[in-house]
Length: 410
Image (cartoon, rainbow, N blue to C red; front, top):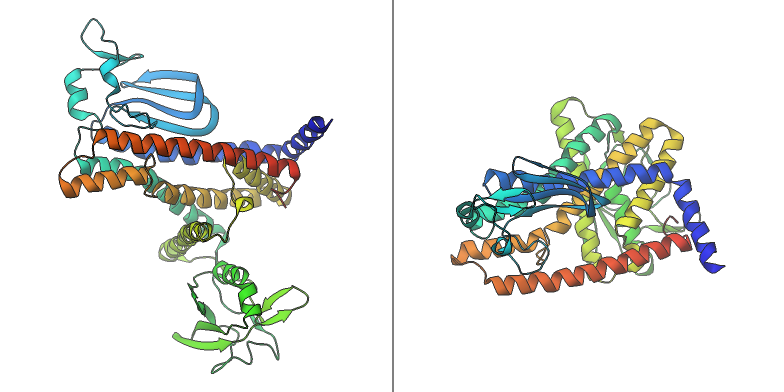
């Protein structure tokens, strides 16, 4: 009975956000494909043999060899790969896998229809190329995610605008009017916030809202003064505010509000400027989340894997769709910018088996003039891959639990 109950809950969630789930899976597939295309194009530019480029994971649904590379569509939509000869992509330690591949009647090494001459494999395999080429091949995946995020951020701000933190109203007899040495006024643009131990550069209203949310308890409990930097008449000024507890909103308040804050850019220069700020916000929040996770300020309830990500995306898209198609499109673009930025940052972490780890190995080789010992690199990749797989299984389980318990979308 309990199993049927949980199955019913799971099916209800999927039904309620069904179309959003489908769109989210396609969006996530796009983000990962763009990442792998970065590796693919750079590998091809350096003549590194790519035996397979795949979208998805698991068994192949469709596959075709073209221009001496196999292109595959696989059953599971989460993931993708650019399998280069000589790369320890799976953490197996087998970087020269072509040594055991069958040879056809023409003396070519045959990878299921993808064929190479031995001299080309020896000369251009991933391990044989220069460290600077390895560096750029590994960097190109995250770089493509950043490019995707920036381009879509430009599309987003050109239509929706950017939330410039300009004060639209100051409440009478509030903390803002009692700020010293200078009370805050309508039209002031907030550019910085600071309490003891925490400092934030503000480029958007979301920066301000997130800073106040994360530091709400400390501000109230320790009665911290809040140093606000703001721009008025082209000059940057500073003032000190003592936030007060608001019974209605149950949090620290200053007494300022921001209405009609979204400013639509005029011209290409302002569009690119706002796009850069939008992109920077998502990069910053990703780095901030990692820092908070390391410091123990985030727990398991705050982490989601592919299943949880798709569920949350699906819910947000379905909710936006109920408002209007344009709202759904803007929500989808915003989520792609967030996740693509997140994927780019996470892949640059200096962890073996990730792009960041390979970039570190390539950098060490450039500095020392000697490649990392294959056994050491293979061992590091294997151990890391095992740990990552365990972590992914755990995250998958947590995602399912949060969906069944109803806590994921609350």
